[in-house]
Length: 152
Image 1 (cartoon, one colour):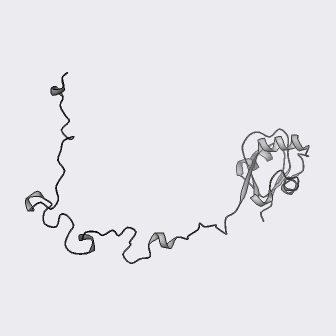
Image 2 (spheres, helix red, strand yellow; image 1 turned 30 degrees about the horizontal axis):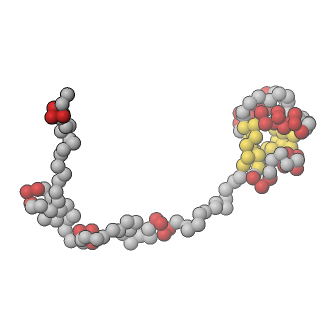
Image 3 (tube, one colour; image 1 turned 120 degrees about the vertical axis):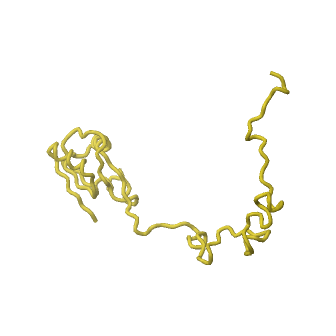
């Protein structure tokens, strides 16, 4: 193949439409800007203008936002319960959320605990916890344990 035998694709050398070059060009006279008004003039940028409505960037707070109604929760599952019982020599028949906070296993400032159905329980447990998933409650009750949910 020689340099003079190369052919370009049909779209690569298509000329762009020139605005304001006579009525026959398709974009003559007003050059697609319409008639009169601020946007038809040169040197205008109205980014963020919402037709007199308070613009979005002025409606939002300046320095972030903290939801005062956010409910903080930490997750706990069966695998973590098994490891906690082994590590801290806790009684699995009488586990309470307060005991886990008092022994600094979980931080109370990070929110209440929620039990999730992940992993398998090694032994029957009686739990007192803020919240739990339906499946987790079923698993504990199948193994012969009890779960007491204390929502504050």
